[in-house]
Length: 191
Image (cartoon, rainbow, N blue to C red; front, side, top):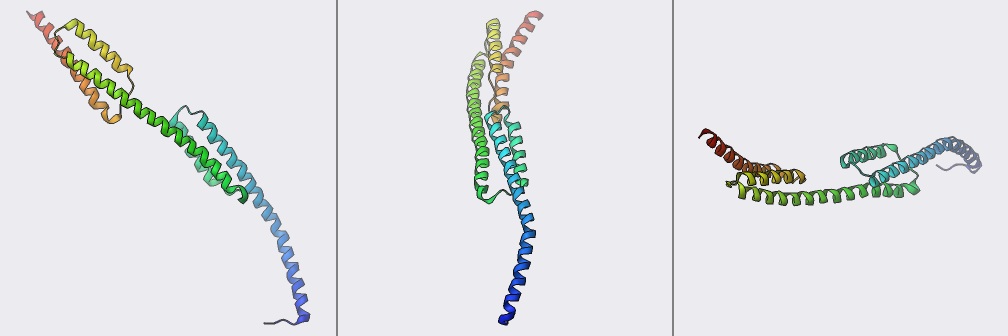
C-alpha cells in the first residue's frame, strides 16, 4: 500500500544504499566474466588462424579433416566472447572451415574425374588384351601383353565399384593367352 511521505525518503535511501552495495559486489563478478569472454575471444581467434593455416597447406586430406574436426570440438567448449564481436568471430571461423570443405570438394571431384579417365584407359587396355588372347604369335604377343601389364600398373586407380570387374576382365584375357601358350609348348615338349 501507500507509504507515508516522511517514511518514503528514509526507505528510498536505505534501498539505494543496499543497491549500491550489491552493485559494487557484482562489479567484480562482471569484470571477471568480461575478462573470460576476452580470453575466449583470443582462443577462438587462434583456432580460426589454425584452421586457415591448415587450409593453406593441406598435405593429407584425411588428417587435415581430423584436425579440423578436433578444432571444431575445441571451439564449441571454449565459451562466449564479447557480444559486439560474437557474430564476426563466428563468421570468420565458419569461413575458414568452409574454405577447407570447398577445397576438399574440388580435390575429390578431380580424383573422381581422374579415376574415370583411368577406367577408360584400362577398358582400352582390356580390349587390346582381349584382341590378342587367341593369338598364336607367341613371342610377339607375350611382349605386347607384358607391355600392357606394365601400362596397367602405371595407370592410377579406377572407381572402387569398377575396380574388381575391370581387373578380372584384364586378367582373364592375359591368362587365356598365357594358358594357351603354356599348353602349346607343353604339347611340343611331349611330342
